Length: 148
View (cartoon, rainbow, N blue to C red):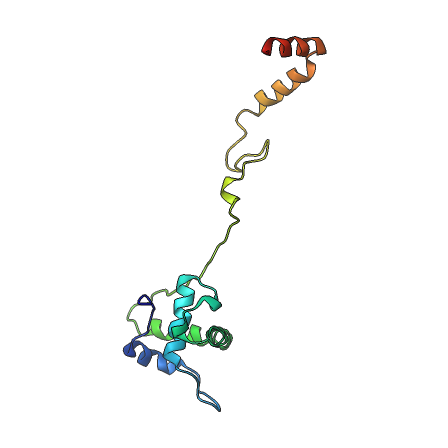
C-alpha cells in the first residue's frame, strides 16, 4: 500500500522527547507504532483494520490506550504548540458516526414536523378532522358510490 502514513526522521526527532522511558524489554519501533496510530485515527478505522505494515493491531491499540492514559499525547500537543511563536490551537478529531442503512429514508410520523418550524396548517387539519367526524353515514355511503 503506497498510501500509508509514515512519520519522517525529523518529526520523530521532535517527538522523541515526549516518549516515556522503557523499563525492562525495549519497546518495538516507536515510529512504526505511532505512524500506525495516526493512520488509524486519521482514517477512522477499527484497530483490527490497520495495515500489517504497522505491526499487530493489538500493539497499536495497547500503546494508544496506555499513552493516552499517561497523558503522552497531550504532552506532545502542548510541546509542539509551545514551539510556535504565536499561540495556536491544535486539535485531533477522530469522530466516526454510523447510521443504519434505512436512516435516510425514514418518513416523519403523522403530526410531527421539524422542531424549528411552526405548525402552519394545524387549524385547517383540526377543522377537517371535525368535519369528517360530523359527516353522517349516508353522506359517506353516497361519496363512496360516486368514486366508483
